[in-house]
Image 1 (cartoon, each protein chain N blue to C red):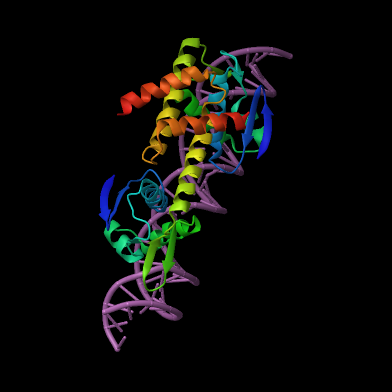
Image 2: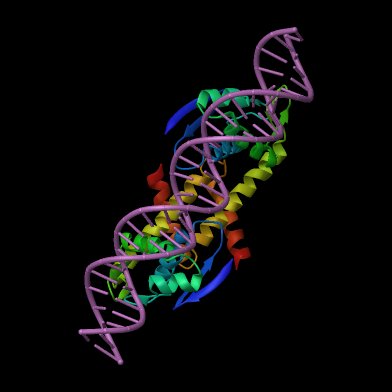
Length: 130
Length: 130
DNA sequence: TAAGTGTATTATATCACTTAATACACTTAA
DNA sequence: TTAAGTGTATTAAGTGATATAATACACTTA
């Protein structure tokens, strides 16, 4: 449960999930939230590995997935950069939201709650969360 | 992605998750949905293992977790039974719902959508889902 | 007593994840 | 040209979770 700041990126790594997945998720979310500027260079594989005290291969895997998602672009000898498309990030955020919603609806489906019940609990959770 | 019917329980087992977790989740949900009667005897470890063509130890693990969650009660020489408390199931369902809601809110937090936006997408997903 | 329960143990196999060491290709700046 | 810093690739090994296998024990019921 350590909190690191690598470059402009805040990362919380624990043992709940694979490390590469945590890095992937958190950078992805940071992009969606606008915490990382479009076009910005993110820390190199080696620097990230060094600061998080993990293996470069693990960072590599996270970065590879980021590129597969179309969120970053790598330039040999220069580094890894956030894909500079506002439009794409917007689409990506929407896709993320819809994915989370589908997952949520699937989870609660058949639990026997009316939608009014669900809404009430959501409101309660929102009040308590903040 | 095979569909089995063991006793009164429908089970879909695939390779997306650990087998014991799928059994656990699906029996838990079946209880919450009322698809399994309270007090009912569920298939024995051996029968379940035989029908799903998996190892008894794997079934055991699922059943152990079910008991840890307070949903079942085992009687040596007799079998495993659903805990006969309507009240407890009700509490359990509420806890499940709240857990799913928390997870959902945490996921979408900071994506930059207003709550009105989220509600709109939820409505859309509900229409398309059914 | 026999058959059917849950339980426990030990051993083995497989896979995902992670680390480690090393080498190569490319870019930039001194 | 050279050195340092990039991403990339490969091979090997270690670890833990998951699953299987074989076997034995304790209990309940018919």
